[in-house]
Amino acid sequence: MISREDALPLTRQSQILDLSRSGLYYRPVPISQKDLDLMRLIDEIHLKYPFYGSRRIRNELSDMGYEVGRGHIYFLMRKMGIEALYQKPRLSRRHLEHKVFPYLLRNLDIVRANQVWAADITYIPMRRGFCYLVVILDWFSRKVLAWRLSNTLDVSFCVSALDEAIGKYGAPDIFNTDQGSQFTAADFTGVLETHGVRISMDGKGRWIDNVFVERLWRTVKYEEVYLKAYDSMTDARKGLTAYFTFYNERRRHQGLDDQTPDRVYWASLFRPQQAA
Image 1 (cartoon, helix red, strand yellow):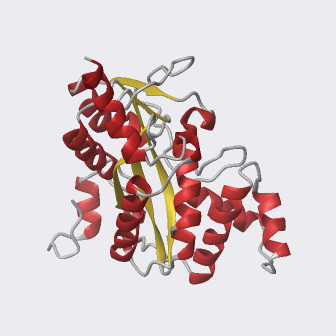
Image 2 (cartoon, rainbow, N blue to C red; image 1 turned 180 degrees about the vertical axis):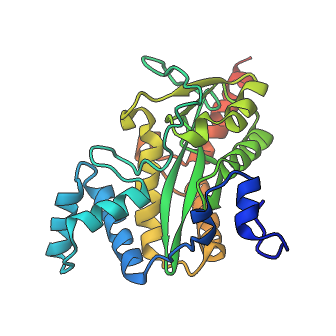
C-alpha cells in the first residue's frame, strides 16, 4: 500500500493503486477531552432515557450546566452509534451486502443453558478515550461466556470472543444478534455455520429481541464502568475481568430466583444427565 518512505512519489503511488490523492494527506483529529466528557454523559443519559434524541439530550445537558449545540450533540451521538428509540447504542451497523438471517426466537421456550446464546457491542468510556466491549451471553442463565475489548469496530474482536466461548462451552443450538455488520460478516457467521449453529437475527429496531444483553449493559455500566475512570484499555480489561468473575460467580439475579448465573448454567447442564 502507500508508503511515505518509498522513493516513488506519493502522487505516482496513488495513480498506480487508483486511490484519491486527497486521502494521502489526511491526519485524524484526536477527540478533545471536552468531547470525551460529553460522550460519557450522553452515554449515561441514553441508558436512562433510551427514547431521547439529540434535542432532549441537549436539554438534559443544559440542566446539568453544559451548553452545547444540538448539532454537536448529534455529531457525538453518531460517533457513538446512538439513536433515539433504541435501548442501546447501535454500534454495529448493517452491511447491505451481508446476508441477514431470520429471527428464530419468537414464541420459543428457552428452558436450558446452551439452547440460545446472544452477542452485542457497547461503548465503554475511559479517562482519556473510549473503547468497545463485545459479550457472548447464555440467554437462559445470563452467564457471560466470553468478552473482548477493542478500540475499533472491526469483526476480529467479535470472532475472538466467539471462538473462546465455543472452545470453553461447546456450541449452542441458536445464536442471536442484531443485524450489525460485525455479526453478519462471513468471518463471524462462518464460525457458527461450521459448528452447526442456527443463526437468528433481530428485526430492525427491535432492541427488545436481545433484552437480556441490554440489561447486562445497564448492570455493567452502573455497577462497574461508571464507578471507575479507566486510564487505559489495560486498566479497563483488569476491571472488567474482576467484575465479570463477580457477575458470574457471586451476583445473584432476581430473575433467576436469586441464584447466580454460574449456578443456573451448570445446574441446567447437569439436570438432564441426572434425570437419565
